[in-house]
Length: 72
Image (cartoon, rainbow, N blue to C red; front, side):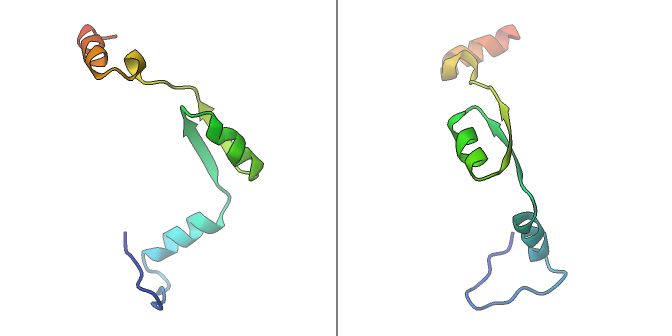
C-alpha cells in the first residue's frame, strides 16, 4: 500500500488505480457477527451478506483452547 502525500498526483497504471476502481464501483459487504452493521449498510443502499457468527466458547480463550483440543 502506498500513502500519497498531499498535493501528489496518481500516475495512471500505478498501484493506486486498484483503489480507485474499488472505491468507485458497486460494493458488496460480507458482515460477520455484528448484525447492527447490516441495517446501517442497507440504509446506504449497500448490498450486504450477513454471516451469523459468534466466537467459540462465548469468547472465553481458555474454554476455546480446551474445545480445540477436543476437536470441537
